[in-house]
Length: 347
Image 1 (cartoon, one colour):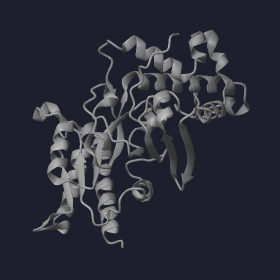
Image 2 (image 1 turned 180 degrees about the vertical axis):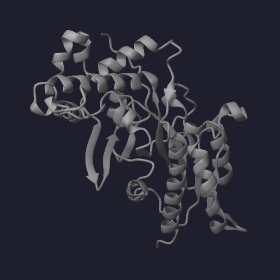
Image 3 (image 1 turned 30 degrees about the vertical axis):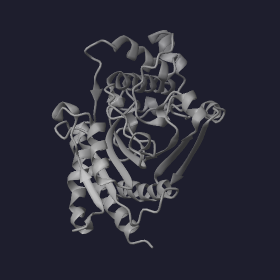
């Protein structure tokens, strides 16, 4: 099968050079990629992935030079307040690390921008975060001007203005020392939806993950440090189809591997209630053919190729997306409020 770059994702650790990094072979391949420094660790329940890309790495993997940090709580749910608190705590820690090399900002001016369309729920996390965050503006306002600015410019289809032009006008007028952008992202792995925060100092291309890329918002285009905070809220439809089929194959392979065990003979149901991830999937070949043994990524590529120009080519969000967006708007606004307060009160 020919290789095409059909995958749409805003997460760097889902890019072609870093996709999944779940096996030793893939990790070794990544470590051998010149220009890319990769690290993975765990802080409590938060899986922390740090990717640093230099000029050579930018050319090799097609991702902009800079630092990318992803924070993931794999089993996060909408009721998991402890998991959200863990994400908030680590986000503050990594924000501080990211600005450590910048000009001291405790006396500086901050501009917070929430990108996205508030009328489309999966895209509303940026504007809704700004709605909550703007309550801190009076605390940092004086007749001499404000130290904190908060704005949600909407999207081009609502305003007729290119988002990057809107942001540039604000930066030119306000002259902030730091711009922080909050936006919804697209993922290529359904397990990442609403369980991950990506933090980067490379700026952002609004809409790039869903194939609707607008002009860049970055330090290079604006002349000030730009930090982007993103939440993956949608996944490409073909990816979800491939995930579902992969789950089905795993389930059937588990059933086949368990059929002769005494525990299965005692089961009151003909089906298993869990998947054995180590089950031999070669047993599926006589049933489904060779494609049942393909790597997961190859199946995704197949569906991407077949559905590229089909009406089934769509983006999908979790059924609890209303709750997720509300939770992240609250979490991010509270996190940024605390971060600004701590920074302003530092010596």
